[in-house]
Each structure stands twice: as C-alpha cells, then as structure tokens.
Length: 175
Image 1 (cartoon, one colour):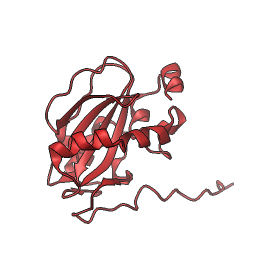
Image 2 (cartoon, rainbow, N blue to C red):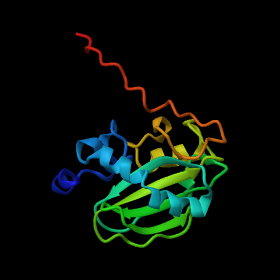
Image 3 (spheres, rainbow, N blue to C red):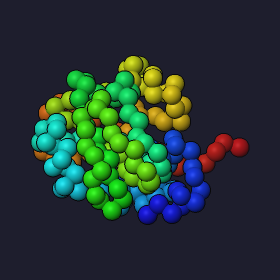
C-alpha cells in the first residue's frame, strides 16, 4: 500500500489527504484503501466516543516515521472541535484523542486521521486564520478545496460536501 512512498520519500506535503483518491498522495499510496481504513467501524466507534455520533472525515496524513504533530490553530473548524485517530496500516488503533491532546510517536508507517463533529462547520474561506497559518507553514497544502466525507450520522452544520470532488476539466495549453 505504501511501497512507493517508502521508496521515493516524497515531501510531507504530498502525503496529506492520503485518503483522497484524486489528491497528490494517490501517486504514492493506495488512497482507496486508506479511505476504507478511515471508514472502519472500530475507528469511527473510538472517535464517536470522544466527539459524538455524527462524524466528518476532513483530512489524513501518512506518517512514514516519527510522531504526529497537530496544531488546533490549523483547523478551519467552527466551533473548534475534533478528534484524531492514529492508526497502523493494518487497521489497529494506536491512539485516539480529542483535538489538542497529545498522541504518541508512531515509530513507523501510520495514518493520522482528522475528524470533526458534524455539529461543527468546516470553513472554506481562505481568509480564515487557520488557512492563513496553514499556507504559511506548508505553502503546497490548500485545505480550502479539501473534500469532506460524512462518515457517520448526519450533517448538522450545513457543511459543503461538493467542493473538492469536482475535478478541473482538462484543457490544452495556449500556443
């Protein structure tokens, strides 16, 4: 599933949204398999125990080694709430924590999955402080166009589940 990522060691920015089949990580990983992992009932049960039954998947990151880092200031979510799941690629859960709580080092390939409660809204405005901070930290990562997946329950905050799924139409470059 991650052989190309381990072999090529791409920049960290190319391994965010690892579950997104049309994202940059798809060149290195089996994004469909990671998307299935993000929907695993055991993971969703653990996350729901922390933030409630209605869940939205908004991001994931393939960690090849080291420890996960997550800064609540980079979450464009209002009201600010969420949970993280650190999962081995075989589906075993290393840890689940509310946003802002520490997670252990993974010590090898793992998937860091970011969920928000469906009572919160993912803010797509590029002027939101979280997007500005993210773009300063990682200029190659644009979370304003990130697709969202309602993975359990129902949306209670009028989230935009369309953006990010519409691929740009190909066109010929001008001569």
